[in-house]
Amino acid sequence: LHAQPASFRSSDGVTLAGSYLPGRDGAPAVVLSHDRLGDRSGVLRVAILLHKVGYSVLVFDFRGHGESGASAVTLGIREREDVLAALQWLRNREDVPSGQLGLWGIGMGANAALLASSEAKDVRALGLAFLYPDIRALARQEFETVFHAPAGMLEPLYARLFDRIAGSDASLYVPEKFLGDLADRQVLLLVAQ
Image (cartoon, rainbow, N blue to C red; front, side, top):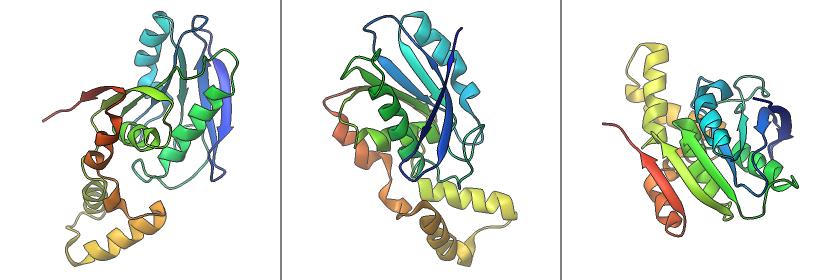
């Protein structure tokens, strides 16, 4: 594979590092988004498969991951800005046809892709693997893991702290609220029990 380095900034100024695999002329382009605690290498197999069939592929490291700039991890809320920046980077390329964009993500990357797709109406297809059904519940679980204790009475305080870091009320980012907006797009949804 002959990947080209990619670098771009999110709307809040975080520098993001990635790799671009140009596809066949006129082929659609796909942004691949990794899960939390990983980096772009976590979606490399999917990138190789898509590239082999001709797609242009952009893989990148989310804020606070891999080679990208430091920032708090917000489980998809602020990372949506990273996906939007990746899409804009593709739109600015002459080898990417207009209106031929797709998103694929896993875990946090799936949540970020779903949230970004509500703003990026030119995204025609999405692959969403293992969406977090409740970002705030996952944040609570992370709190309990780090501190080895139930959140209990501290849960409201922790929820407010997480919302402050995320810059928004995390309870607003439940996937069901956004999936209904995708009726005019092709969606592959992978879930596990």
